[in-house]
Amino acid sequence: MRIAGFQPLSLLDFPERPCAVVFTQGCPLRCPFCHNPGLIPNGPGKMRADEVLSELERHANTVAAVCVTGGEPTVQPDLPAFLRLLKLRGFAVKLDTNGVHPRMVARLLSDRLVDYVAMDFKHRWSAYAGLTKAAAPAVEHIRRTFSLLQQSGVPHEFRTTVVPAFHTAEDLERMAVELAPGTSWAWQPVRYGITYDPNLPKGEMPPLEEIRSRILAAHPDLSITIRR
Ligand code: SF4
Image 1 (cartoon, helix red, strand yellow):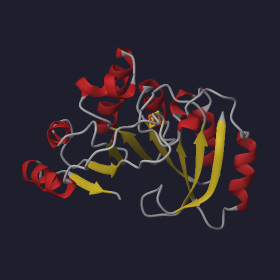
Image 2 (tube, protein in one colour):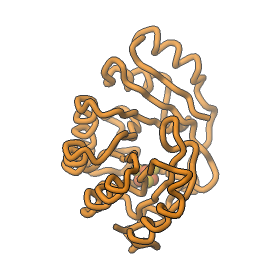
Image 3 (cartoon, helix red, strand yellow):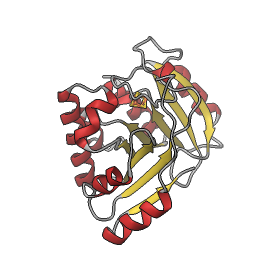
């Protein structure tokens, strides 16, 4: 595993329980609003898997869950083996993914190596490539993961970083149509500061509460959370 970093305690990265966070190195997308651009290049990483496991053992009294995030964890071929080591030690595992590797996600789901998955749902499909610089096959792969997860029965959520320069109310309304009833959808207003595109255009955030109410009136079975 190419691991960029380890955070022993987070109260935000696993639903309703404290967790440790493992950051993996390397991501094939180029989201302009990415707030972790240092994790994008395919570098060797800074920690070995056994060092992370030792750290986890040291903190086993405070955390029983691990969030594996990126970069993009699913592009690493030894991810299943790493997650199996976490499961063998009794940790609940959450995976954060952008969805570029449906075969890997399918394997993790069928081998029961993940307890929760958070997948990015960055935009309408027709705008995906332009936003993320993903090549056409990558967008198809992301769509496959999106469907797979919705049919999986494994607890999951979709997440959208809302960027005024790229997302309108209509975009969010059209994205809602893609979600199955009962789906959890989290919106996170963009954080400016360090971003992959240092010239990320700023703008006025659309009225998220209002848009949420409108979407929920049309899709009452969705659960939409705004995370500030
Ligand atoms: S925000 Fe985009 S570029 Fe950054 S790690 Fe996530 S998917 Fe990759």
